[in-house]
Length: 325
Image (cartoon, rainbow, N blue to C red):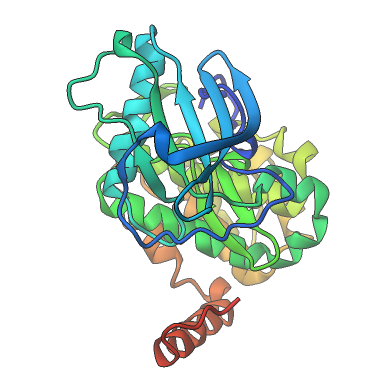
């Protein structure tokens, strides 16, 4: 997060829409197999998706299986670029979850220095990122609860590993809008939560930064991009001020400040349970709240959606070998 706004700087060379996806293709990859070391001879390049100062992103096909993947190639010669690639590889090796993009293969970086050559990461392919999906398929907003629930599931898994994503935003959330499968991607800014940041005079850890990013995501989905640009990070920094707002709200009073204005806007489009979740997230602790995402999943806002997911899991367990969409 940079400046006074909750939006993050672009620390990778392009948006996740180019990094992992192309809008036309569907995700058909088998993600059950563990990641392996990258060997370029095993893949055929199908075309360049994008390029930038950090490197290139290509669409590739594994020759043996004919499965389509995405190849991130980080250019050699820059410590910052190498550190970004190293962060992503190390994070994805620790994370195995249905709502986190799967790393299929990567360069062996154990003894590699930035001068030794490019670093490669092969990732599963998804149809679209959330930013582009909202623009091109606004009807997915009808599934806002399901999108938020899957993002929270992914973040809960990350936090359970004592890690923080560090750059959660719509561009770094992948979605198959046909099956409503959601996956978090781009872990180049992933870090240990002990790395606290001082923002507007207040210290917060990675857990809190990720939770505030979900608050921003709620606003983006419910109020649109123009209003989400208005959000100031300082609105959510001071826990004492947030507690005063919550206590005033419990007494039936909405304070006349920027947070109060935002809340009134949310009241017009969000259910009472949704507003309750919003308050729960903004009032989380600045440090050490690694269970916030997991606890949020039990909020009444997700009733019904959660039960449907549990029913789907039971059907899958009862029908091995079938793929339910």
